[in-house]
Image (cartoon, rainbow, N blue to C red; front, side, top):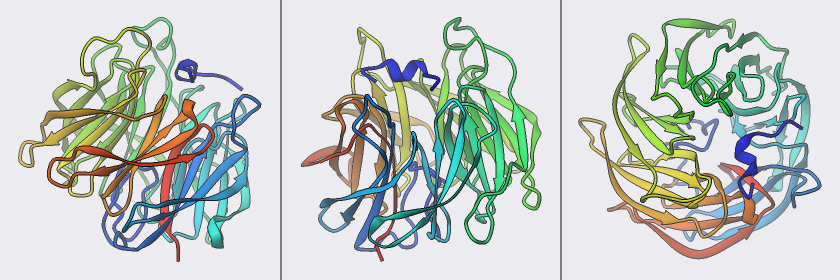
Length: 386
């Protein structure tokens, strides 16, 4: 398996009537459901304590987490996405011979494998589903490419409908000598796909054909971040007017104004996720918006913290409002539950998920004391338990 730099650290769209492809946004219709099943994507292998995708029951009223079991054994199912109809779940298999797997969601948190297809690249690390549930998008980190796949009526995946190989490099001779697509993100209107590329310091913009699933380079073709930043993940503001890009290598968040009509981005502001100078390796990992749209969160590995930013509702700009220990090692990911009451930090290298209650007035994170053991957690997504 091809390894990335980030592993050497001792290592989503709005809910509306559906759940996000990635755990970057929550809330909306169905958010009041009392019980949820959370699925956890992981790294597997002989040096980890994981065999695939795990699931646990989450009670929204109390924050209680109850471990269920191994939902499906599969290789390196790092990132997950739930279909809009909530009947299917998809996972990238982040291996050198990259694949993507389709599962049927069964009772009790179990998953049944439907089929598996080639990701058309190495090291697939992120995926997203379009608003209509017709197309699955993939980012291949190791080979620096993106692809789209049709989702059939029975939940299975067809062969790739579109494939784009990124080219070029940026300033860091170690990590940016070639492209590294790191995430794929649908615009709120489902017209565009924004693909962050850590190796290019760009957010590439593609038009999504809703009928054929093809990805066509847009004009403007990309937005830039500062050389050496290494863009990783992004999230749209609640009103869709701004884009917040998390830069892995510089540990920063860059704010862009987003023109939905033109599909273009204009840089506005950049802030650090760090509290101050930090000795040792440090890389930003995940970014998420709370359901109210008032607060933005970003995790950083190394110091093992989640940074809190308050969002100006008119300007879209950020103000640093706090930083909180994840009480574990290497917070590769975190998720805000669909009610917006809790944040669950997935600490990859301490093999646990730590729960925090979100202060609804300030956005501050308060540990509840609840900790769930889970080997090498990477991604958390929710679906109703009923």
